[in-house]
Image (cartoon, rainbow, N blue to C red; front, side, top):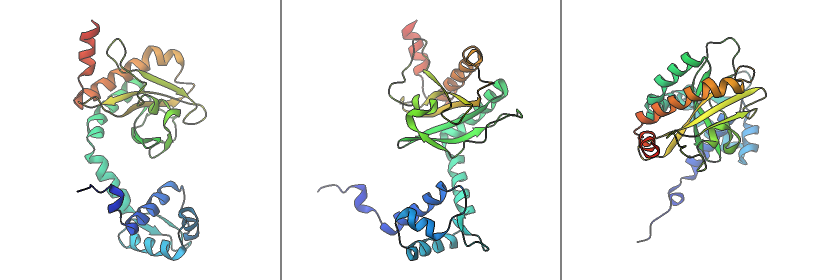
Amino acid sequence: MPTRGKDSYSIQSVENALNVLEALCDEENEVRISRLSEKLDMNKTSVFRLLATLENRGYVEREKDSGKYKLGLSAYEMGQKFLSKMDLLKKARPVMGKLVRECNEAVYIAVRRGEDVLFLDAVDTPQQVKIVTLIGNRYPFMSTSAGRVLSNNAEINANGQQETDTDCGALGEGITSIAVALMDGSGEKLGSLCMVGPEFRLTPEKIDGELLPSLAEAGMVISSKLGYVGHFINKEIYR
């Protein structure tokens, strides 16, 4: 008996509702039905019905004065519950906090999503001059250090450490980031650990002498918590 592809089980009304939610996620401000209708190439009546259903469940909220729509608290609550149960974040957060205290720069977890890299969570720096939060932002996969370390070209070096990567300006003018991949017990790259800060603080000298070694060590600790032992095995091979 031939197997059916995932698409054959798709329910169009559910697909449309999810498209509406994703479109609202991409918008920085509240939007009108006409904007969503044009963006999704759907008629206004269908968009209105979907929004009304989502509003009843709290996933969408409507501004009374303007009539514009935005994501509701139910969507936020679901996202927070997902993040709290995500093993990568649970294992990474204590290490991220320690790294921020040591280096005094913001540290992010980023994951691949299609052709983009998504900045999923962060521990911010206490410094007065800081970068506006990148949580929820997506960037072309190979344009940032956080994405490039997840590519197949990023390999383990002779010291048994995951290769690191640096970029300047990919996340915004005057912003520097450095990253290392995080792996699980099977060697799969689940995401990247990324340190982000203003270019004037993340100088090449400071990156090479202080930040990259600390970031690489933190990455190894998180990967070990996720079951990865390749760091230790590779060290034995190259010894």
